[in-house]
Length: 377
Image (cartoon, rainbow, N blue to C red):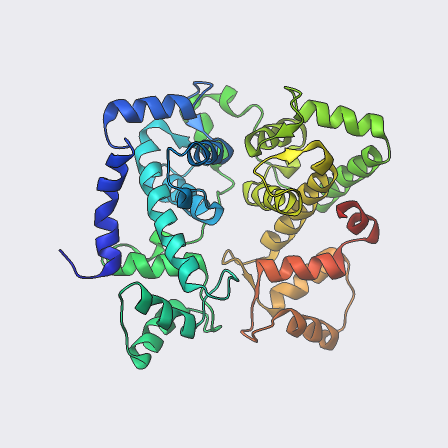
């Protein structure tokens, strides 16, 4: 057996999954039925997240599995690399999903341990000391060389997805380099699922080309509802259909798909959900009193994700030219020198690129109309 700690970790997964009853065919069938509760043979990210939350909360699965960044990686790899490329996990992909959930959960646990600054990125010093603590001892020069291999844009920081790519290279150096590419579900997902399951499968899940005016229309509807307690209660009742005054991520996802398809973007939904519960009472449910912030977050993050993806070259980063395109779409008129100054204010580490979180923060402060900022508060 290899002495590499990551290789050893990967080799222990089958044993650990067997402990939790996730290898045996009967256990897999039972777990799939629980996940695919409506029996349509495909499950969404929201349904998978609900399963993980419940299994961890019930003590059936270890707590480290309830990690949203790791779950997103597991979902993307299952659907886009191990599966058929659509946005859904099918029954035949279920075992791969479980394996990926455990694998990326383990990796994110290690990544968090290395990330001593808790900012979801690691620098060369954190990388060196963190690997030493898990049994991978590298001298400073070797550590710097390894870090440089991961830090492809030479920005001095490594994200979780880049860390996953590094580990993949250690575990399986002959694998394709795009194995862990940070890919978002493509525009062809609806076509793929209809080809497999018929047109009825996507009648409520239409993939459409989005425009800024569509977001503006939804924003007007939300603002109008916020000014009327009756309208707000009606919206909440359609979301909280069982009347228990709390809603899960899966319920929010279903409501968005059915009522506001323009907001049906899973990464934005996940960010809006996490922001709402984090600033609420901290549990895994959105309560009635947290509904207003949820509406604002759903609209805001979808709008910003759309804008970011409109100009981003599919690498989840903006360079200066892409940033200027964002300014044009947002109607922000700036000279090149003012735009350069603004870009440098966002690009805190002077790496020449803006990450999505940095862009979100800037958009909140600079680009979001005051009325919308008030709606988020």
